Image (cartoon, rainbow, N blue to C red; front, side):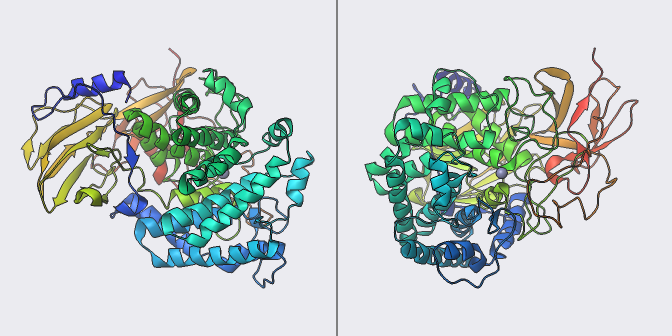
Length: 621
Ligand SMILES: [Zn+2]
């Protein structure tokens, strides 16, 4: 935690009689809990995870293996997949990697044996392919793509695809205990080491200009898992100095970059810092995180327009379209945020995480069948254009399967002193090392409160730190075992209870939500409306929408989903703020007020199969 924030938190808690102020910030490192220690309980996150679990378990492992087997010269009678997994698509194989990650995460976070068995089956199939190829190489396309990459000839993104497969295998090892999966990754890493050794630094710098996912990250993770420093050295070959240098110097030169190519490189820098303690790489990641979250993100926490950063920092009013906020980008920003939070304990990381999770992840899966979204349009009059199950296999189909398989991974963190409660999601945490179970009972955001119950065989002393978001209105309040506490933390900090907890102790925290606006940094007359952390979307009807355009290109080869010039004008409001009010009854529906056209607003994450607007044009004073 940075000193300024520590003081703010300490000051906020100074009025509390049970608060034992420390002389110095906590030195112990913040860590996440293992996926197996958090179980979701009924609520919107649990519902979404279940939809995704069915989506993942509905895939045929033999079809996911088909092009791997064909590439290895092995027999396969399965029908090839379509979309970006089709036999002629140069990204084929990437989804199988994401799918392995999803299986491992589902197993770890729910205990679903089917998910682990399916992951094990795919790993066994991939092992046969790697054995048949004999060089450690493992892919759903031949090495020809890498030859073309080396020769600077067209090839989509061969290392991007390899990274997904390696990450999926490593997840099967670390989350599902698969020993063969680790051997497969090591084989792929050995092949990668040989491929990169043949290239000098100048040639490698040229290779790094082609999207390569998080090759540095997965090699650093492999070094951490195995303790083998050789993978760290191979990882260094994928550290993109042209991107890193300005960030290390505190310069935002992100304009013009492809967003989802860039963020995984920065996650690699973050993991390098954790592996080697080289502060330069922490500085790169932290500067990047602050720049993107504070100056390049919409009210939703998302970033990117047409997959790129097209403007100088702080310029977003020109960046509203049907192609904003690619879902992989949010997935990757959330991954990076977890690292930054673990270094800093900064509640702003959790605040950002919550914003991007509710507005950039939870509404990006169709509840009917688990289909995933590619973009979250923020231009007015667009709609959510979903993929089709078993057909599209976009990058975001893959990252989406992972996102919805790990909705519990950032609710809680820990350090030597206690637990951080960062998100308000119904769940159960088993802190086995301390013999504690913490149950979070909430229907948030349908109710503005949460309840935490401690289960423990013996009294145990620890700090329970509950985040008090900046969006909390009118001051929150808390009750311990029914007795009101005499103080509360200021919004943007933590309510810290440092005490000996007994079985059944119950903390109820009230977190009043209110309407607020988020103006564009470069055009304050363009505003989004939020209720607590939820960005609201104005409903704009279903005109022209039907089965043919609610799903991407259902009858043609699948590419990036296309909106055919179907935006609508941004709604203009003539009244002065406040110009939205909540409907009675706490239903999370809202209405515009004032003399202009009335619109109903609902949380963006709950809106499907309809046109909407997130930003409104207000009269310029
Ligand atoms: Zn994507």
